[in-house]
Length: 116
Image 1 (cartoon, rainbow, N blue to C red):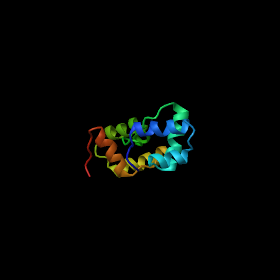
Image 2: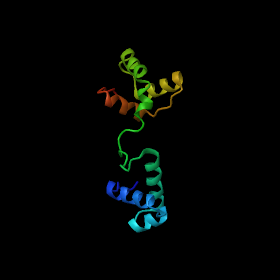
Image 3: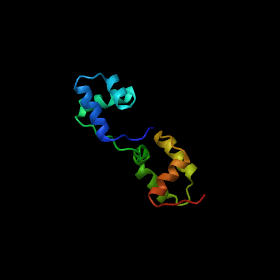
Image 4: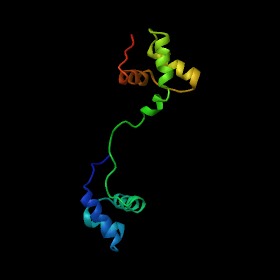
C-alpha cells in the first residue's frame, strides 16, 4: 500500500480532468499513476470529495465480536476453559471458524486472561 498523497495534489488532478485533460495526461503531468488518477476522479464524481479515506485501524474484529456473549458466557461457565476449547466450541455450535490466537486477541481486548 502506498503513502497518502496530499489533498492539494488530488484536487489539482481532478480539476485538470474536469478542465478537459484526459486522466492519463493529468496523471503524467502531476506525476501520479494512471490508475490513481482514474480512481481519484471516480471517487470525486461519486462523493464530491477529494480527501483520502482513513488508513489502518481494525478491519475484522466485528466478526468475532458478534459472538461476544457466547464467548464470555462460556468463560463464565467454565473458568479453566482453554483457547482451543473456545475455538472448537464456536466451530461446533455456531459454525464460526476462529484460530485460538484470534480468540486470545478477543479476550485480551476485553481484559481477560486464560490459563494455558
